[in-house]
Every structure is written in C-alpha cells, then in structure tokens.
Length: 235
Image (cartoon, rainbow, N blue to C red; front, top):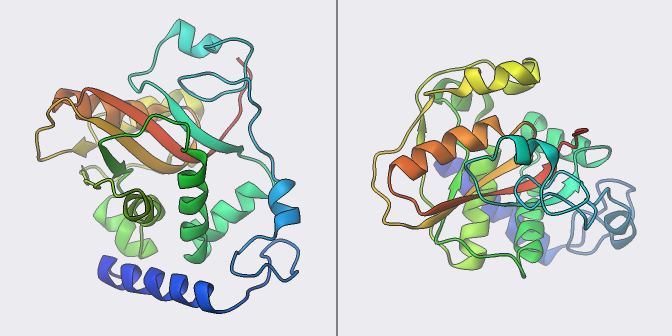
C-alpha cells in the first residue's frame, strides 16, 4: 500500500466513521461513531498521574531513577496508557493487521490528552526503512502523526531511516540503543523549533533518543515524545 493509498483509505475510514454507527472493537457493543465504547474506554490501563516528567514511567517525584541517572535528550513525554492488555492488542491490530481505523482513534486520543501539554512547533513520526514500509504497506506512526497534525494545525515533517535494522522488539533492552545508532537522516535545518516525535509505544526510549540527537544536531531547540502507550518498567 503506497502512502497516497493509505492517506486515501484513512480519509475514507474517517468519513464512514462519521456517518455510520460502529461496534466497539473490544466488547462488540454499539459505540456510535467511535471504535471503542465509553465503558471500555474508561476501563483501559491509563498511566497514573504520578509519572516521570521526561519518560512517563510511573514513579514518585518529578523524575524516575533512569532519567536521574542518564537524562534523555528528549525533554518530556505525552503518553496515555500503560502498554498492557487490551491496549497492546489494539496497537498490534493497527501495526500487524492493518486496522487503520485505530490510527484515527489513537490520534484523536493524543490530541485530547495534549490539551494541557506544551504544544510543539512541528510533529515528526518515527520513520520506517523503505524495505519495511514496502513489507507492511504503511507506517502507523506516520498515519497517526498526519492526523494529529491536521487536527492541531501544526505542520508535520519527516526524516528517513537509512539502515534496515532488526526490529527493536526482537532485541534485549540493552542492545536497542546500539541497534538504532546512526540509523536516521534529516535533510533540513531547524531553527530552534520544538519537534514532537510521534510513535505508538515508548519502551527503552532508544529510538526517541537517537531521533532527538539528529533533530538537535539540525538545530531543534527541544524535542518531546508523543506516544499512545508507555511500556512500564521497574526503576
């Protein structure tokens, strides 16, 4: 599926959702124009209020132990859920089963959650290598970022992934930083702008950190992470 086709399909899905009632993806009840009904939405595993300002890992205080020991290059994280059932199943349905309607659902959730969050000057999705993009047919981060950009009126930029690395999910946490090193390229300069990097899940933060490095080298003043879910770890 080309990017043009995925944009067209997403627009068609949004049109259909706005016209016709749908059933909840989790319980099957009528959910109106939404993919998830109100009851299921309220029972999802939301992150607690007490979380790290930088990486959104639950903790007591402003920063978690990991960020105190080694501060990431991105300054803060907007995350909604803990990456556990059924949110993990929904994200996997988007990524691996092509349920593109969920890109719109997650994007709308991010926009709603950002009401009291510092707004960036630009959005940028985590990129996929062209070989992976051809294999999957779409980039879920790009689909979400495009909708978030349209809903907020904030422009979206893109960078390239120039090394076809193994999937981060297939690697031990300690190897993920090395796996993405020198994997990205951005062909433009940034003039002190705040760039929000959009993705589905934040786990170790290695990809966010590497992308932040590239953006800061290109002149960004600040980077932040906008993700649907945070993979919670003990710190």
